[in-house]
Length: 138
Ligand SMILES: *[C@@H]1O[C@H](CO)[C@@H](O)[C@H](O)[C@H]1NC(C)=O
Image (cartoon, rainbow, N blue to C red; front, side, top):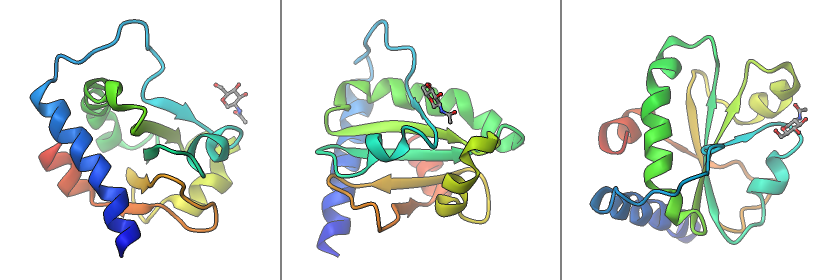
């Protein structure tokens, strides 16, 4: 439970601050949210001093497509907080990511998971309710 709280707090913190200072932008960071796949996921997400919020999406999911510009804008808004919380996405239509997505996706796309700082590989990220995330942050 403590772990969960410790994981969630930086996210809420980052998002609220970004909301207040949403002019916080960096030029020249075009691959953000970070695109992860089966080759770089583990290295980027596990056992790091920062937390990562990951969207597992499908390029065939209409809702994911409609959400994409908002998710991108959200990522851009919190980019200056990337030393605390990073934002990433995984395309589950990519055949190379099948195993990765089977491990982390819930029943429907998109699935958002929050991997806290120093997250261990053997536990899955906390699933963040799509409805909540969209309502309050996207
Ligand atoms: C994963 O992404 C990296 C960086 O974009 C790329 O170099 C690599 O080939 C990709 N791996 C797979 C399995 O698609």
